[in-house]
Length: 169
Image (tube, rainbow, N blue to C red; front, side):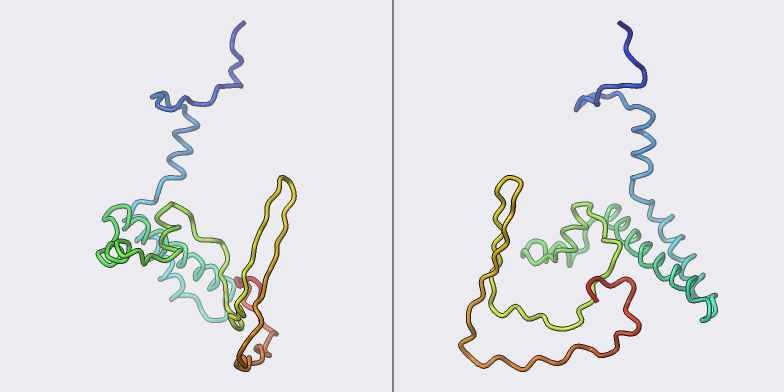
């Protein structure tokens, strides 16, 4: 029976056959060339400089694009030149931040930003997540305070214009 051309077997590891779709996908997901990334970053910085202040949506778009392209430039520089001397020293000492480890593993930055509004106050707590098949249980154990806790400041009162990129604010 002839094979159905619309169905294909998954590629075998080590197989040298590259299908056209796989080649296109690899090209689309490949890191940006360093010069292209620098050129795009320069474009968006120039665009932001040219925009009048009352064009808020366009300025926000340019600022977001600048953030994305700065990340892409850093990634392209790291891919071309390797980690910096400081990153190598910190990595050897085991003092590498979570963002740097994630970026080194190829994890992209999330499409949102975190903003601390108050705290943090952990109050000597331990959380335990128990997974049992399809069910899960979260237990938070808190040690009683044996000393007077410092007073906590009131949360910010200006909530009229929250940061649209912030989570939980």
